[in-house]
Length: 451
Image 1 (spheres, rainbow, N blue to C red):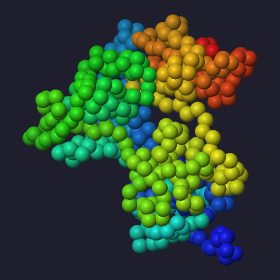
Image 2: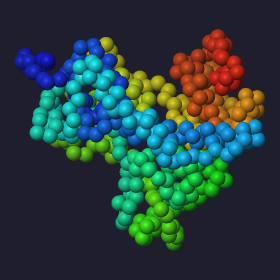
Image 3: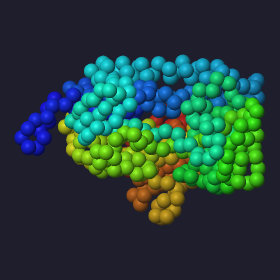
Image 4: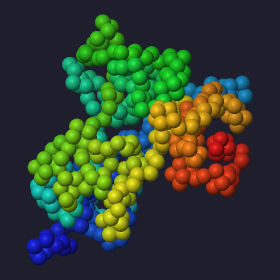
C-alpha cells in the first residue's frame, strides 16, 4: 500500500484503513469496503461486534421477548386462560443461545473478505501508527470506533453497584432491585425485572424520566409501572452505597436508606476516549466524545471517527453507527466525497408499552407552529384485536402536509414508527402516500391510514 506524502515521496503502510473497535461503527462498513479490494484491519480488545450484539440491543430484546408475550396474554385474559410467568434462568439461557455465537459469526464475515483482526488494546503512537501490545501497525487512514461504556457514580461504595452488562448476565434474578437512573437502560430493565417478579425501586435525580421523549407519554408508562408495583423516587440523589451482610444499603439525600439485594447504576454512558493516545497526536475531544467535521474527519486529517464515540447531535444508536460506518466505507472506496447527510433516525424505548419517535418532536412542532394531529390509538378498531389497554400518538406535518415527525406510546409503537419512516425520509406528498397500498389487516395499514 502506498500513499503520496505530498513531498513527492511515497509512504508504505500495513493497511489502507485501520479501525480501532469492532462494533457497528466499524464492521457494517468495513466488510463491503474490504470486498472492494481495500486492505482493512481491525483492532479489538474485547468481543468482536462491540456492545450491541454482545451486551446491548440483541441481548436486551431477547430478555424482553417473554415480557411482551406476558403482556399480550394479560390483555387477552379470559380469552387466553392461565397465567404466564417468566423463568429467569431459562430466559437467560435463551439469551445466550441467541447471542453467544454472534462474535464468531461476525468474525467469519470479516475473515471472508480478508479483514485481519488484531486482538488487543490499540493506542496511537502517531497519526499513522497504532501500538497493539508489543506490536506496531501502520495505516493510511485510521478510524476510532470505540463506543461508550457505563458511567459510574463517584460516591462511597460505588463498587457495590452493577452495570447493564451485569444485569444481562444475572443467572438468578434478585428479589429486590434498586435502579439508579431513569434513561433507556433504567426504564427497560425496570420493566423486565418487574415482569419477572422482582421488587423494583427507581431512584431519579430529577423529576423526568426519558427526558428526550414527550413527557405526557412517558408519564403514562411510569403510571403503568407504578400500578405493577415499581416505586419511583423523584428528586432523589444517592450519596452512598453500603454493604449490609447479604444485602446492600442505598443511602439517599432524602434521609432515607433503602435495603436492597442488588443495585444497578444506570446513570448513563460515557465515551471511550481515554488511553488511546488521542491527545498525543492532536485529536480534539470533549466530555461528550470525539469532535469531527461533516466528513467524520477528526482534527487530524487522516484520522476519522464513527459510532457512539462521536460528540454529535444525532442519537447514539445502532442505526446511526451503521449509517456512519457505511458513509465512511463509500468515502474510503472513492465513491463519494460529499459530507455526511443524516436521514431521519428513529428511536425507541423497549418498555411495555413501547415509546418511539422519529423526526420533528411534538415540543419543536409546537414552538415552530407546525400542524400536530393527535390520536388515541384505541379509536382504531385494529388496536382492539389484541385488546391494547391505552396508547396515543402525534403526527407532525409541515405546511405542504408532508409528514415530518411522529411520536407514539403503545404496545406497537416501534412497528408504527417503522411503517411511517418512508413518508418522512422520502418526503412523500399526499398523492405519493395514496399510491402505497399496505397489507390489510395489519398494524401497518392502520398506521398508514392516519396519513
